[in-house]
Length: 249
Length: 306
Ligand SMILES: Nc1ncnc2c1ncn2[C@@H]1O[C@H](COP(=O)(O)OP(=O)(O)OP(=O)(O)O)[C@@H](O)[C@H]1O
Ligand SMILES: [Mg+2]
Image (cartoon, rainbow over all chains, first blue to last red; front, side):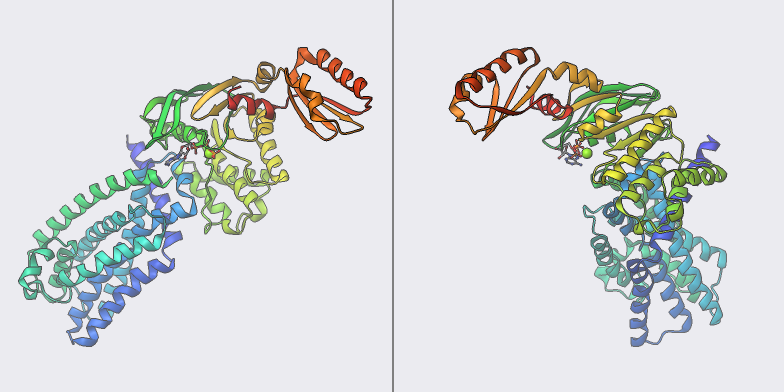
């Protein structure tokens, strides 16, 4: 049993390393995962003059979100296109292990980008209130957003650009309703319920809490809801992809 | 080693595989031979656990492939019909990745990887990205990737399709070598000569059903009772003259060439009749061929259901 689990972990890690080497430096990943959130952030910065603390918090929130969800949408369409999917699935692994490897790679991308931004913040003299809590929130939210990204890879297309497009269409509006740039309590009353169903809201709330001491919910609620989102998205996305992956052969 | 029992699979209204059963014993090369769309790939996918059959079961070394896909697949190596190595990884890294998925110790991967690449003539290219390889080289790399775990059983879906004669020969000789080392091999092909050359046993599959099974020689004897007689006369002959032959045999006439297909035991009669015509019309015979039907002809006849 223990040997079995350690074998699974080794296989997931091997798949994940493969995904990192193949996709971390691909154009769409860098554009959607790094530049896109940066440009959005710059665009907002130019129009307003927030404190340096809230500027770092904003960049951190959207960068983690975009980076962690930028790799999972493209891998399955890409592998279908390159005709490597059947080759890899014929090995002693399951579809679930392949999906987990993908999510791990995507999640670590989010974590890595987040750490870079935190480091830049510290360099500029902006320190989060509680580093362990910050790290925990980054880990959990990155898993959550990588699952979310994986949902888009279930589209019946082997054109990676389609998945990227669809995922952007969904991610973009989420940024504006999740209390990243505009605090939730200043959103139009009609949009507020929407912000409650966005997984970004709760992560952004933790970040705001730790960087500028402003929060809409308590940390406990943020983590709990984020965990629920992660579990639900995880089950749903793996199940959906398990059904559609066979159609890709 | 490999057992398929009543496999059935349909895609919507297309019945791709309709009750395929066979078993392959240790050290055998078993060929699934059939025209395009016969259901070969679908069958292989079900046996290797990629597709779940609508009905029927598949076993690899006694392990139910759909109950325990990881267990079953750890005994096999597969080269799918349409597949690629990771083109942005090097030849060597592709091999190592697959080795890791079988949880093989690193030293073993290195040792075997080196041996396989040398054997397949890719060792000099080990650090090239797979995208720089030619089609034939990619196929060989895929074969090496299938062999890195030293599997007991190998599944090859159309191992030589699209390759030139030299690459195809290389792969074939590799396959023969593997059998000498005691490997069990299941391959699919629509190349009849290849099946005749390589396989100990073939099953001919058409429209999702196995319609004949046996050694290539078996099939030749069972279905190959027809022979083809070709005669070249010195002058073109009027087609109507051949009507008396047409009543009994399959006759075609192309200017001076006359081709007659008949059963072996009718050879004497047919030759007599040809001599008759020759004498009557005062022709001379300039050339004559008598051939048993090739495996290809037999295959075409079995598939047509004659
Ligand atoms: N994923 C799929 N979805 C729908 N139909 C399919 C699918 N896979 C196979 N088929 C159909 O099933 C039938 C058998 O296909 P299969 O690929 O098994 O044939 P094959 O014998 O391997 O042919 P080929 O020699 O062309 O490779 C075909 O009619 C094909 O169109
Ligand atoms: Mg096929």
